[in-house]
Length: 311
Ligand code: NAD
Ligand code: UDP
Image (cartoon, rainbow, N blue to C red; front, top):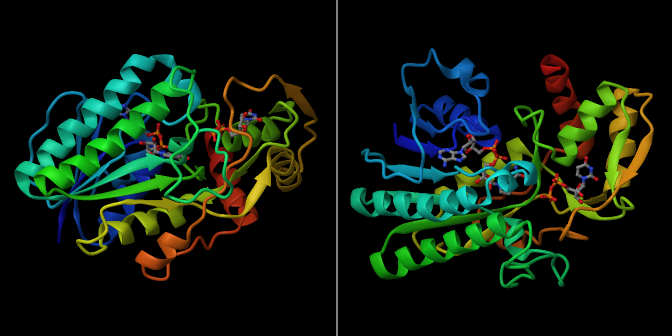
């Protein structure tokens, strides 16, 4: 049994990670300030005596003895990370410093939930880990993108200067049950709109693309990455390389929900990336036979069932 700290554990991805690690027989401490996460996401875990919840903000130091830390604390949707951009930067940067300091002190392993946003609006396609990105450093998305880029730099430097055992997952668009209904991300927006027979809001032409990964595939990748040997100290893309346009996604959601919704077009937000698709060769090489298994249709079906219980 390992003792594992998950920051942001009450959020969408964090709650699935808590569940999986508890099911594997570990002791899990979920740290969260409940900015975008909720107790509802972890309610079903509360009776487990090996599960603890701590209300805490990662911008403040936190001390505990654990074997592993998964650092997920950070709002992930554009609406939420742009709500208080300075706080978003503090969460990424000071959160990384506090959690890396903890990992150094306890000689523990630490995994950072980084993002495909470090590639910005990418000029190479698909994106490989050696691509440095095309990020507007002062744009609307910069609080998130630059915060996460700075966190990656901190992780690599704590490894190089202080020998901290670090792992960095660059996560591409992930979806599934427990997504926040109000967070404005495309999958949750389209499903909720379709279930309510409201207009499906496509920003821009809808020809921009994303690659959608179901949450269980990401969780498997996370755990395998944490368990890689001591030579893996560089960023690894975790995403599903099958690419869809937002128009294709909207049609799939309308079809699966038998919705009467019509498509409507709204302006494209500033600096919205035109395309995004991971190259996952590195993940396939360093992980144990990992690649995404859940097809978009199957993952959407599970997510739709979840949202039916929430609406
Ligand atoms: P989420 O918003 O559901 O979860 C983030 C969690 O962090 C929430 O529970 C929130 O309350 C908590 N949190 C925020 N600020 C905090 C703070 N200062 N102190 C303590 N807790 C705080 O988002 P998610 O989709 O589950 O994302 C989890 C992580 O994965 C984030 O770091 C995000 O950047 C990263 N990520 C997610 C995606 C995706 O598609 N979902 C893609 C790339 C990266
Ligand atoms: N999007 C959309 N309609 C919505 C919400 C988002 O067309 O109601 C688009 C958005 O402009 C972007 C894509 O869907 O091109 C993915 O947006 P999301 O916020 O989910 O993730 P990110 O842009 O961070 O990849």
